[in-house]
Amino acid sequence: MKPYVICHMMSSLDGHALTDGWARPFKKNAGALYEKLAQTFKFDGWICGRVTMQEIAHGDDYPKGLAKTPISRTHYFAKRDADCYAISIDPHGKVAWRSNEALDSHVVSVVTEAVSDDYLAYLKSINVSYIFGGKTEIDLVQVIATLASELGTKRLIVEGGPSVSGSFVNAGLVDEVSVLILPLIDGRGDHPASFEIAEAAWTSPTYLTLTSADIQEGGSVWLRYTNQL
Image 1: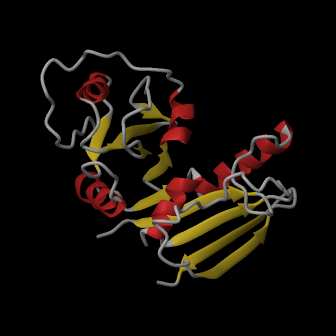
Image 2: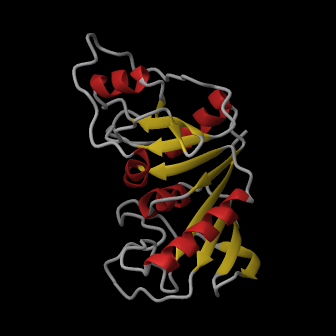
Protein backbone atom coordinates (compact mmCIF):
# COMPACT_ATOMS: atom_id res chain seq x y z
CA MET A 1 0.00 0.00 0.00
CA LYS A 2 1.24 3.50 -0.83
CA PRO A 3 2.44 5.45 2.24
CA TYR A 4 0.53 8.55 3.26
CA VAL A 5 2.66 11.49 2.06
CA ILE A 6 2.59 14.92 3.71
CA CYS A 7 4.40 17.90 2.23
CA HIS A 8 5.35 20.22 5.10
CA MET A 9 6.64 23.68 4.15
CA MET A 10 7.50 27.02 5.74
CA SER A 11 6.84 30.10 3.63
CA SER A 12 6.83 33.88 3.64
CA LEU A 13 3.53 35.61 2.89
CA ASP A 14 4.56 35.96 -0.75
CA GLY A 15 5.40 32.28 -1.10
CA HIS A 16 9.19 32.18 -0.76
CA ALA A 17 10.79 29.23 0.99
CA LEU A 18 14.43 30.14 1.65
CA THR A 19 15.23 32.00 4.85
CA ASP A 20 18.40 33.77 3.65
CA GLY A 21 18.29 37.41 4.73
CA TRP A 22 15.59 36.91 7.36
CA ALA A 23 16.42 38.16 10.87
CA ARG A 24 18.25 35.48 12.84
CA PRO A 25 15.97 35.44 15.94
CA PHE A 26 12.92 35.38 13.69
CA LYS A 27 14.37 32.55 11.59
CA LYS A 28 15.28 30.54 14.70
CA ASN A 29 11.83 30.89 16.28
CA ALA A 30 10.04 30.11 13.03
CA GLY A 31 12.23 27.06 12.48
CA ALA A 32 11.51 25.73 15.95
CA LEU A 33 7.76 26.14 15.40
CA TYR A 34 8.02 24.47 11.99
CA GLU A 35 9.73 21.42 13.52
CA LYS A 36 7.26 21.29 16.42
CA LEU A 37 4.34 21.16 13.99
CA ALA A 38 6.10 18.54 11.87
CA GLN A 39 6.31 16.19 14.86
CA THR A 40 2.53 16.13 15.15
CA PHE A 41 2.39 14.05 11.97
CA LYS A 42 4.09 11.06 13.65
CA PHE A 43 5.93 10.04 10.47
CA ASP A 44 8.30 7.10 10.06
CA GLY A 45 10.40 8.78 7.37
CA TRP A 46 11.30 12.32 6.33
CA ILE A 47 12.48 13.31 2.87
CA CYS A 48 14.75 16.15 1.74
CA GLY A 49 16.73 16.97 -1.38
CA ARG A 50 20.48 17.03 -1.87
CA VAL A 51 21.07 20.68 -0.93
CA THR A 52 19.19 20.41 2.37
CA MET A 53 20.77 17.06 3.22
CA GLN A 54 24.27 18.37 2.50
CA GLU A 55 23.72 21.01 5.18
CA ILE A 56 22.60 18.33 7.61
CA ALA A 57 25.45 15.94 6.75
CA HIS A 58 28.19 18.53 7.47
CA GLY A 59 30.61 16.70 5.16
CA ASP A 60 32.61 18.33 2.38
CA ASP A 61 33.73 15.26 0.44
CA TYR A 62 34.08 11.49 0.66
CA PRO A 63 37.16 9.29 0.06
CA LYS A 64 37.68 7.97 -3.45
CA GLY A 65 39.09 4.64 -4.52
CA LEU A 66 37.08 2.49 -2.10
CA ALA A 67 35.44 0.45 -4.86
CA LYS A 68 37.95 -2.21 -6.00
CA THR A 69 35.43 -3.96 -8.26
CA PRO A 70 32.13 -2.87 -9.89
CA ILE A 71 29.19 -2.77 -7.47
CA SER A 72 25.88 -4.26 -8.57
CA ARG A 73 22.95 -1.84 -8.85
CA THR A 74 20.80 -3.48 -6.20
CA HIS A 75 19.32 -1.87 -3.10
CA TYR A 76 21.42 -2.01 0.06
CA PHE A 77 19.89 -1.87 3.53
CA ALA A 78 22.19 -1.49 6.52
CA LYS A 79 19.18 -1.26 8.82
CA ARG A 80 15.56 -2.28 8.33
CA ASP A 81 14.10 -1.72 11.79
CA ALA A 82 14.77 1.99 12.41
CA ASP A 83 12.12 4.00 14.22
CA CYS A 84 12.54 6.72 11.57
CA TYR A 85 14.38 7.12 8.25
CA ALA A 86 16.11 10.19 6.82
CA ILE A 87 15.56 9.81 3.08
CA SER A 88 17.97 11.77 0.90
CA ILE A 89 17.04 12.42 -2.75
CA ASP A 90 20.56 12.53 -4.20
CA PRO A 91 20.53 11.31 -7.84
CA HIS A 92 24.26 11.72 -8.53
CA GLY A 93 25.61 10.81 -5.10
CA LYS A 94 27.01 14.08 -3.80
CA VAL A 95 26.06 14.23 -0.12
CA ALA A 96 29.14 13.43 1.98
CA TRP A 97 27.57 11.74 4.98
CA ARG A 98 29.75 11.47 8.08
CA SER A 99 27.59 8.80 9.69
CA ASN A 100 24.49 6.75 8.99
CA GLU A 101 22.36 8.86 11.34
CA ALA A 102 20.76 12.25 10.69
CA LEU A 103 18.67 13.90 13.40
CA ASP A 104 18.18 10.55 15.16
CA SER A 105 17.06 8.87 11.91
CA HIS A 106 18.76 6.18 9.84
CA VAL A 107 19.95 7.57 6.50
CA VAL A 108 18.64 6.12 3.24
CA SER A 109 20.23 7.63 0.13
CA VAL A 110 18.11 7.59 -3.04
CA VAL A 111 20.41 7.51 -6.06
CA THR A 112 20.29 6.60 -9.75
CA GLU A 113 22.14 3.71 -11.36
CA ALA A 114 24.47 6.31 -12.91
CA VAL A 115 26.05 7.00 -9.51
CA SER A 116 29.71 6.11 -9.09
CA ASP A 117 30.88 2.82 -7.58
CA ASP A 118 33.08 4.81 -5.21
CA TYR A 119 30.05 6.58 -3.75
CA LEU A 120 28.21 3.32 -3.19
CA ALA A 121 31.29 1.80 -1.58
CA TYR A 122 31.59 4.81 0.68
CA LEU A 123 27.95 4.57 1.79
CA LYS A 124 28.44 0.89 2.59
CA SER A 125 31.60 1.65 4.57
CA ILE A 126 29.63 3.86 6.98
CA ASN A 127 26.46 1.71 6.95
CA VAL A 128 24.27 4.16 5.06
CA SER A 129 21.43 2.40 3.25
CA TYR A 130 20.76 3.21 -0.39
CA ILE A 131 18.09 2.48 -2.98
CA PHE A 132 18.00 3.05 -6.72
CA GLY A 133 15.25 5.30 -8.00
CA GLY A 134 15.93 4.88 -11.72
CA LYS A 135 18.67 4.52 -14.31
CA THR A 136 19.56 8.19 -14.87
CA GLU A 137 16.64 10.04 -13.26
CA ILE A 138 14.68 9.54 -10.06
CA ASP A 139 11.22 8.00 -10.42
CA LEU A 140 9.49 9.09 -7.20
CA VAL A 141 6.61 6.64 -7.66
CA GLN A 142 9.15 3.82 -7.73
CA VAL A 143 10.98 5.27 -4.71
CA ILE A 144 7.84 5.47 -2.57
CA ALA A 145 6.88 1.92 -3.53
CA THR A 146 10.35 0.64 -2.58
CA LEU A 147 10.32 2.41 0.79
CA ALA A 148 6.96 0.83 1.57
CA SER A 149 7.78 -2.70 0.41
CA GLU A 150 11.34 -2.90 1.77
CA LEU A 151 11.20 -0.78 4.92
CA GLY A 152 7.50 -0.82 5.74
CA THR A 153 7.10 2.96 5.75
CA LYS A 154 3.50 4.05 6.16
CA ARG A 155 3.71 7.80 6.74
CA LEU A 156 6.27 10.05 5.04
CA ILE A 157 6.86 13.78 5.36
CA VAL A 158 8.49 15.76 2.53
CA GLU A 159 10.35 18.80 3.85
CA GLY A 160 12.02 20.23 0.76
CA GLY A 161 13.71 21.89 -0.86
CA PRO A 162 11.32 23.52 -3.30
CA SER A 163 12.26 21.30 -6.26
CA VAL A 164 11.77 18.10 -4.28
CA SER A 165 8.43 19.28 -2.91
CA GLY A 166 7.34 20.38 -6.37
CA SER A 167 8.36 17.07 -7.87
CA PHE A 168 6.34 15.08 -5.32
CA VAL A 169 3.27 17.23 -5.96
CA ASN A 170 3.71 17.02 -9.74
CA ALA A 171 3.98 13.23 -9.51
CA GLY A 172 0.61 13.07 -7.74
CA LEU A 173 2.10 11.48 -4.62
CA VAL A 174 1.15 14.09 -2.00
CA ASP A 175 -1.94 13.34 0.09
CA GLU A 176 -1.68 16.38 2.34
CA VAL A 177 0.00 19.79 2.19
CA SER A 178 0.99 21.61 5.38
CA VAL A 179 2.26 25.18 5.12
CA LEU A 180 3.38 27.45 7.94
CA ILE A 181 2.84 30.99 6.59
CA LEU A 182 5.15 33.46 8.33
CA PRO A 183 4.22 37.13 8.92
CA LEU A 184 6.78 38.61 6.53
CA ILE A 185 7.12 39.57 2.89
CA ASP A 186 10.35 38.50 1.23
CA GLY A 187 9.87 40.41 -2.02
CA ARG A 188 12.69 38.82 -4.02
CA GLY A 189 11.20 37.57 -7.24
CA ASP A 190 14.09 35.27 -8.05
CA HIS A 191 13.98 33.56 -4.66
CA PRO A 192 12.56 30.00 -4.90
CA ALA A 193 8.89 29.50 -4.18
CA SER A 194 7.76 26.81 -1.75
CA PHE A 195 7.10 24.50 -4.71
CA GLU A 196 9.22 24.58 -7.87
CA ILE A 197 8.30 22.55 -10.96
CA ALA A 198 10.29 22.72 -14.19
CA GLU A 199 8.23 24.11 -17.06
CA ALA A 200 8.95 21.01 -19.16
CA ALA A 201 7.74 18.69 -16.38
CA TRP A 202 4.66 20.69 -15.34
CA THR A 203 1.39 18.97 -16.19
CA SER A 204 -1.42 20.89 -14.48
CA PRO A 205 -2.24 22.78 -11.26
CA THR A 206 -2.81 20.73 -8.12
CA TYR A 207 -6.14 21.56 -6.50
CA LEU A 208 -6.47 21.26 -2.75
CA THR A 209 -9.17 21.31 -0.08
CA LEU A 210 -8.56 23.35 3.08
CA THR A 211 -8.97 21.22 6.20
CA SER A 212 -7.70 23.60 8.91
CA ALA A 213 -6.27 27.07 9.50
CA ASP A 214 -4.73 27.79 12.89
CA ILE A 215 -3.12 30.99 14.15
CA GLN A 216 0.22 30.32 15.83
CA GLU A 217 2.20 32.27 18.39
CA GLY A 218 3.99 35.19 16.78
CA GLY A 219 1.40 35.74 14.06
CA SER A 220 2.13 32.76 11.81
CA VAL A 221 -0.74 30.78 10.31
CA TRP A 222 -0.65 26.99 9.91
CA LEU A 223 -2.65 25.86 6.90
CA ARG A 224 -3.43 22.24 6.12
CA TYR A 225 -4.90 20.95 2.88
CA THR A 226 -5.77 17.58 1.38
CA ASN A 227 -5.29 16.74 -2.27
CA GLN A 228 -8.59 16.59 -4.17
CA LEU A 229 -7.37 13.82 -6.46
